[in-house]
Length: 272
Length: 172
Image 1 (cartoon, rainbow over the protein chains, first blue to last red):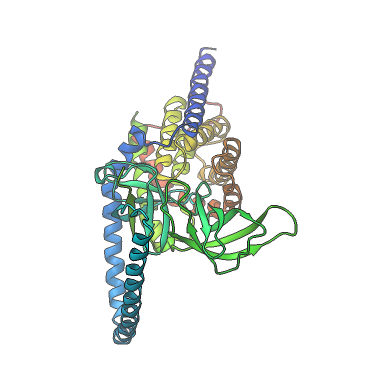
Image 2: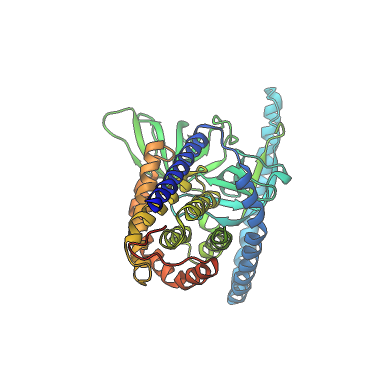
């Protein structure tokens, strides 16, 4: 009888614990995403280990690739020289366009856009669960990073910061199912919401009558309050326009190859 | 307390390895859910209260390593621990097939609980299809991992002073 009561008591404590966990989760869902003390401590403690393992792994992989790259390096060098010449021509052309743009802006009395600060960071680990899409970077609050800051790569939008510790931050990728970015289809100027599907992006609330084609570029609209305007998100890969209804179904491929992502830029607005 | 001090750092180390090395060398293969495996092991072996607290802490730990709202995995792991402790202890904990079998069932239960909580709380409304489609492969990866890690769990368990719970054992 005593054993039975003891067992009941323990089960009751576990039940209370379960309810507390449920309430904690529910509370965290309703409140503004913030990094609590437990999360901060774990991130701080594991960051050097993650960074060490990643750096060692990358060193070994890089050494192996360097060895492999020696094969046919001259041929690649020649083609890169050709590419460089082509890019130089494009750069000169772009400089001309930028100068022209500046002149026109001044002419129309446009305000100069505030240049945001970009903090470079390295990707040190991925998500522990297979169905969520996040990465950890090696910069945090010590570098001026806080929650909800946009993260970019050279090819486009990566995501936004969701948890920050002193020297590391977790970034929610745009392909995660809970990610939604205010977007614009570049050609048709159709407004949409780019929502992650796990592997790609689906564009929601794109008006049915707006003309959208496969291959069109998807860029940030700047209306969501997190991402600046005009940053590439991806390319449209599939468009389904129903005969009736308000919206079309659009799928897009992200501009960033997340499987090869190593360096990112965290954009810190000047007022932040 | 000893169990917590042994299994919590082990889980942290395994999570660091799977978020750095695994994703670099096997990016297309699902990561094993090592935290779930430890929870299942504790469900069979650890005292009820201490194991429950440990399962909850392991869930919180996994929340830090994954991009989900804090508390999500805590609920699931505590529920899985209670179920394992309640049902699994009717079986012989010494049997080497028990933990692999529990891993298969536990992987499915973990995925279903995740879907249920996500749908109920509307945290991520599209991820459920992805979770359900990944169940068979996840079960396979978890099964191979538990076979590899079982001796380590047993060794740490023996240091921590846990003993397999035999059927009809009076105290938990």
